[in-house]
Length: 205
Image (cartoon, rainbow, N blue to C red; front, side, top):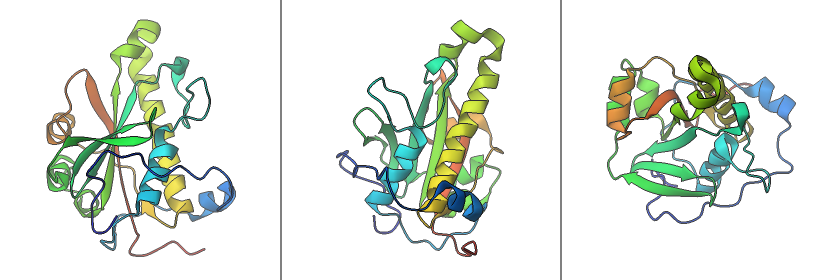
């Protein structure tokens, strides 16, 4: 994608690459929390790979790239870019249009005015319906949901490093304000944000 565009038609994303490329050990060594970006956009291949790393399906049974307590899979990944907010649908590996406006500055304000949120070409919002977990886990549902958000975020950050990109996990935000910006309705709750882009100061190899 040129600029900060994500997608505009909801067509299927390019198939993820599941063999070759940077090793996990190399990605671990290269991962840094990157808060400054060049402004260059992501390609559709990069975007598709990141979405797959976050919540891609890896088996006929529907298992995902990130572990989920009880295989309940309460998370939805929203992708925020210059041309709107999109919902990643792992079953068909597509981005479904959700909000037609660029809400990154509204997200930045909701995240206590952290510039990395407004300047990244793409921000991943990890949202969950924790009520789906409460039936099985009761009061521990939120605990398990937060753990799962961490699993997904780490997948995103390592995949970003493997692609020569960078990102940073953002946990300081006003939940209601984030939900309003991306038009997220209860029972869905935003639990973590991950801005991703081309780092202004890449990590040394």
